[in-house]
Length: 295
Image (tube, rainbow, N blue to C red; front, side):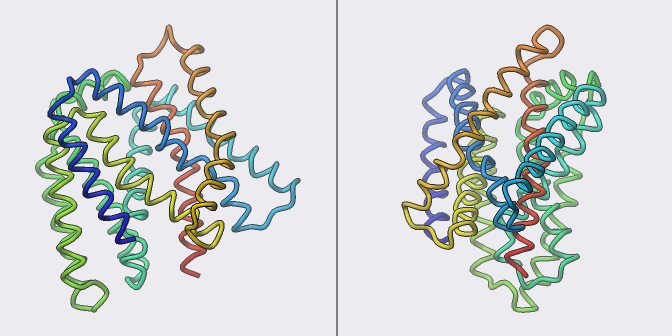
């Protein structure tokens, strides 16, 4: 994973350079393009992962697919009828999922309760860093989705609280020889880089840089290793080939969502409803995958 870390660092600086050259409208388009390609692909092999965990028959896989689609449909309905609840759930699921993906290997020897707390806090910390540097955009989007006008989301207080919790657990991990100082400083350096990017970029562009370079690509490689046993080039290509039909279905689903609700909802409402709908089952599948790896 050292190569992936270096790739993420170099690519992040490249994106930071691109940020200084492109107008915000181009950043927005490029951000959405990355999310709907690399971002969506990394979550398009959940059914294959479930089969790897459970070893289902073809009939069993059909039931899994049906259940998966029901979860996605339920998420869309929750977003439509109770958007504030859906938004809270979306942020909570995403926070844990981001933290788990980033830290699962590094903190594998930490006790389960502290790992859960750390994963959730780290993911929420990253999201709140994005919110902090794009506060007005976040408030506008929350209003568009929920109809609730926020005047603050207490970024300073929440970031401070999350930071103290994360530092406390990192110190505990260090003194119990779970992490060394090199790993801790490397991760702190990553956070500094992300903060600079979030401060310099628009909301969607900054999020897409984190989502693709620091989450989706590492997650995709973890999945390839879990499904096929190693990271050979042919296995990565096989993963993408298997993911393509599900990715295409997701894109078609997104287009249908726009066509069905284009007169009732705004763009960001539909975008986040769709992203939330695929995030909920994906986060559960990844939790099962990491649990299987630990066991």
